[in-house]
Amino acid sequence: MAGIKKIFLVILMFMVLQNVSAQYHSVGAAFSNNVTSFPVTGFPQLFYSQLHPGINAFMEWKINKSEKHQLCATANLGFFYHRFIQSGVRIYPEIDYKFFVKKQFSLNVGLGMGYLHSFEGYEVLVPLDNGDYETRSAFTGRSQFLAVLNIGCAYKLSATNDKAPSLLLQLHANMQGPFVNSYVPVLPVNSLHLGISFPIIKNK
Image (cartoon, rainbow, N blue to C red; front, side):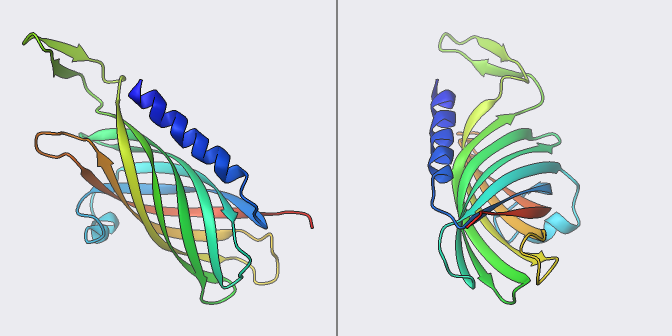
């Protein structure tokens, strides 16, 4: 029931985001590599350590009028596979600040909070109150809280076409929990996202 309540709250947040008064929005997707490491300081490992793939889809709304300093709301849905540790589904809203260095190039930083459903990928023995154990299926999964710090950049493929797509490079520091209460209550997972977004301009 707790997991269902968390999913409901995240969906409710998405519904609020859809009603934000935005000048335009965009949709996109990204492929990711995911590594368990210290937040932020472990980012370099994303470029040379093992590949733990993932995919993310998102929808973004601009919520202010400035062209140089933009504030955006984003709804994210993603999946990742980390061999020997877990696979997971991430669902979370995010608030991003974008600074346009040039018309085609921007830097961003964002914060998100939401829900992660993790799957260990193998059967787990769960202790019962009477001292016995029961086997939990690898497909049952566990409900997790998720917090995300996102920093990155984007390059728009055209300076004159408002509907031109943008290439994205994003670094995410993900914190999930409770993971293992006895010794790893919060698990940090860093992610490298390479993707593309397509703007959808509203008719004036």
